[in-house]
Every structure is written in C-alpha cells, then in structure tokens.
Image 1 (spheres, one colour):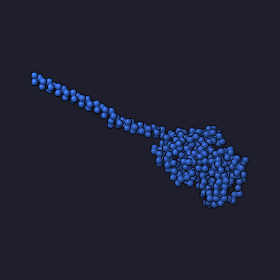
Image 2: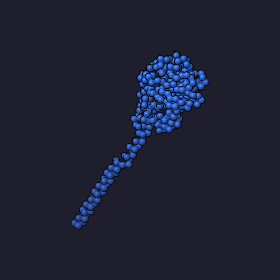
Image 3: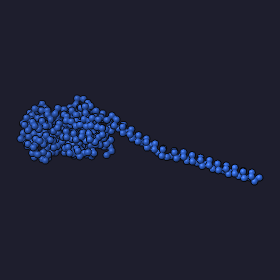
Image 4: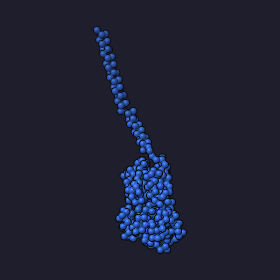
Length: 353
C-alpha cells in the first residue's frame, strides 16, 4: 500500500514538471515571434525603402536635363555680355551635370528667335521685345514663342549719344544725319524706330547705319557718324570709352513725347541721367528704358531651371563683380516689369522665397 502511494505521488510530480516545462516553452515561442514582428528586422525595412525612394527621386530629377547650355548675350561692348558670361559661369560651376557657356550675339530680337528655334537654351532680352515676340507684333511678323521668363535685372537706358559740339540737341535734329540705330534685329533698332516714330521720323529720314555699340563708338570718335542709339545699362562700356577721349552729349526726350511713348508702350519707364553718369558728360538727360531680362527655353526641365536660378541667386556676388548693373538683380526686384509668363522652374524658386 505504501509503495503504491509513493509510485502515484512520483507520477503526479513528474506530470506537474512536464506541464510546467511545456508552458515555459510556449511562452518562449510566443515571445520570440513577438520580438521578430516588432523589431530590428521590421524597423530596418522602411529605412531601406526610404533610401531607395530618395535615390530614385534624385535620378528622376535630372532625367532629361540639357547638359550643354548656351546663354545668348549681346555685343561685347554692351552690358549683356559681361552679365551673361557671369551667369553662365555660375551655372557651369555650381549646377552638377550642366556645362554652360555665354556667347556674344545680335541681342534681343535675334535671341528671341534663336531660343524659340531651340538653338540656345537661355538668353538676355529686353522685356518689351519678349512681349512683342509672343504677341507676333511690331518687329515680329508672326508669333515667336517657346520660351518663358526667368527674372528681370536692370533698366536698359536708351541713350542717344553724340559729341558735345555736333549741334544735335533734340531728337528732331537727327533728321538727315548719319545715325547708328543698333544691330539688325536688336532691341536697340526697335527702340530707335519707336522713338523716331513719336517724333514723326523714320529710318528713311536719316542716313541710318546698322552697327553694334562698339562700332558706333569708334565711328562717332572718327567722325563717320553723327549720333548713335545705344540701349544698355549704364554706364555702358562703349560710351565710357568714347567719353574718356571726347566731350559727349546724351540727347533728351521731352516730357510730352515720353508720355506719348510710355502710353503706347507701357514697358518703358522714364529715366534721369545725372552729370556723374560718364566722364566728360557735364549735363543731365531725360530718356526712357525697358528692362533687361533672362528667358529660358520651355524645353528645359522645371527642376533644371530651378537649380540654375538658385545657383545664380546664391552666387550673386559674381554678377555684381561682372558689371555694376549686376547689383540691380535682387529677389525683391526680380519680377519687376516681367512681361511674359514665368517658367515653372523659376516660379517654384520665387514661391519658396
């Protein structure tokens, strides 16, 4: 009887031990599953996906970018050239994967046509000429588009330059004189035509010569022409060179004519030049000015334009060092006088400021 009792007791104890071991094993399995669901392995997965997503996004952002960018400027003696070259150098140095070059050109009208025709990606142009191009009016026989605005930079003062002893004191005095009216297809040519028209004159009433600023300055000094239209930021290099060796006059436009011109062409603004504008220029002059602006081909991807605009504003000192008018480019004034729609890439940049 005693043996049976002890045998039963031992069997019961053994059973309790086995049950306890089984419960502990189940707990261990449960705890292990729980750790594997919540833990390092699962938390690493989103990190890997995030890294891959970022990498894919970076690839997408540069997809379709134009690697070789041409920026059209103007004549070497004007303001477009140094500023355009400076912008191209900024883009070339600070935008990865893009090589940019600023080159001389026939300026506004030519630049609008070449960007529209995909022969260049960026260009400096007058705001009035940009508007006329997209309207297909004035000097454009048909609509010239395919480009958008990036930013405006500075007023391009229309300067009617002559020697102080030429006897030319008013626009009307240009009749019958030898006058340089800018390069063929330039903004200067368009400005000259409009100012002359307000004074009931045409190119046929002059002995008109089509030439750039540098040639005009040389020909004025040599006595081969009597006056020249120069549309450029002040001080203009070609006029500085002329003023260094001769007394000059900048012919004023009277108030009545300025009102007439600005009413017909609202992108012009009145500008006053003082006696400190040039050496050997001891008088004041009243004239008008459109705005210089940068345009971009609509074929340029939005992200690429955004990065180029960002690079220029983050390295604005290079613009200031290239020419005095580079100081006029600021975030606050960059859209003043914008005459056409902004490129989406530029719009995004300014929206973020």
